[in-house]
Structures are given as structure tokens and as C-alpha cells.
Image 1: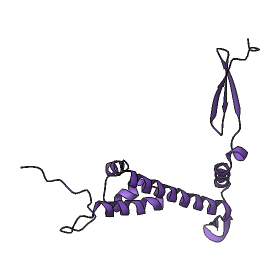
Image 2 (image 1 turned 45 degrees about the vertical axis):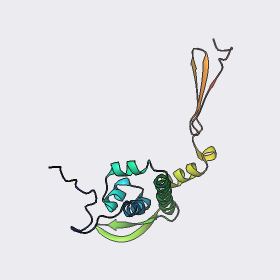
Image 3 (image 1 turned 135 degrees about the horizontal axis):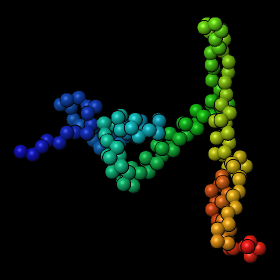
Length: 156
């Protein structure tokens, strides 16, 4: 007697019809687009990570997945922007009693946002020159432009 396969989606009620593939994909994409966390999408749809990886081989799903991932990144960026510019209220305590609040901003998040938007202006521009066998290798940190030039004849 063949072993009966356990359905991936355990979120549905016993005896109810299993959601269609399209429904499970929609549930996954909706949850994934909110957080960018694959596990959240898998739990919402009652599927495994392997199922998502299989689906990502399909061009239509891959396009929807990529859009959901972009949406999640936009949400994260919006929150980073809010924390950097609007800040958050933090309680102030005196002798164990809350006596007020202070507005805190995140300089670190602001720096990341600036670097992400204009790496040429705000990224690290350190240059490292290395002489290996008379070949000059220049690595520009920040834009990750790795170039190799011809040996410099003046280097002995």
C-alpha cells in the first residue's frame, strides 16, 4: 500500500478543499511583499521553501516574486527614512519613573539612505594600490570597480 502524501498546506480546515496553486502563490506573495521574509510567505500559504524555489523557476511567478521583493524593500526603505528623519519617541526615566520623552533620530540609517541614493557622492572612495609582479591593481572601494592596468615601467 502506497504511503499517502501529506498536503503541504496545513492552514486549511480538515475536510475542506486544498487551496489551488494560484491561491497559495497569491497568499505567499501577499505576505512576502509585506516583510520580504520568505518564511512569512511560506507560513501564510502553508508551503515549504522548496515549493517557492520550484515556483521561482516559472517565469510568471518569478516576475511576481521580484515585484513583491521590490515592494518589501520599498517598505523597509520607507521605515528607515521615517526613523532617520521623523525619529521615534523614547521614554526618559528619573529615579525609576518616566518623566518625559525625547525624540531620537537615526544618523546611521540616514547615512545608509544617502549612500544608497548617491554612492558616487556619499560612498567610501578609498583607493588601494597593490604591486604584484609589476602589475598595478586598483580597487575602488564603494563603487566596487575592479580594474587591472598594465605594469608601470617606473616600478622596480
